Length: 215
Ligand code: 1PX
Image (cartoon, rainbow, N blue to C red; front, side):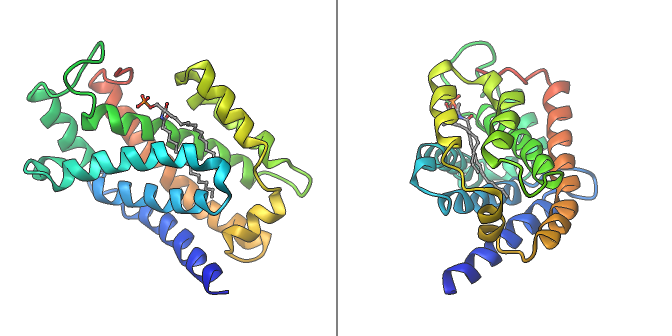
């Protein structure tokens, strides 16, 4: 029971964190963005160890961003907007091929940003799903429409295999522990627009700066 309470708190926290990501001028606070990802990873870890190769990579990227935030240039990393400006102005980003800056904030965040699109598509499917919908199918459809396009064959293969280990819709909703399916739907309805907005603001920023394909 204690574990479930923790989880409930965590998931609610995740959703709230995405709410606090955007400033009134539509800047994205990196600290909250990263906190949102931490929560998602914690949730994913509850789904089973087949997902640990995915969460390892996510944790690794989260840590890179946290290191930037806590580093001596941390003041430039308060928002995604300030990070992009700082790193580009200071030529701290590999633009065409991997080189001196394999851990730039820009390229690291781009990987999570693409994964956020997966999340948006997956949650959209969950929201419109019915009792007999298959979570593995929803997950792989969302993946194929987003992240898969950026992944090598071997990663797609591993991800595809992991998706079949996802629990069914009823169990998935139980693990979310926000209440009845109707309540899950309500939470999704509240959260999805915020996740979409954070995604779109970041996407526009990256497009304007021509950095959507960073190696
Ligand atoms: C309420 C539902 C919540 C569900 C929460 C699930 C959170 C999922 C978090 C996924 C984070 C994945 C980050 C992947 C970043 C990435 O694309 N990395 C690749 C490229 O990085 P590189 O540095 O080499 O350029 C890297 O190669 C990735 C390796 C790991 C495999 C990534 C598979 C991603 C599948 C995403 C779907 C997760 C399904 C979770 C099931 C709920």
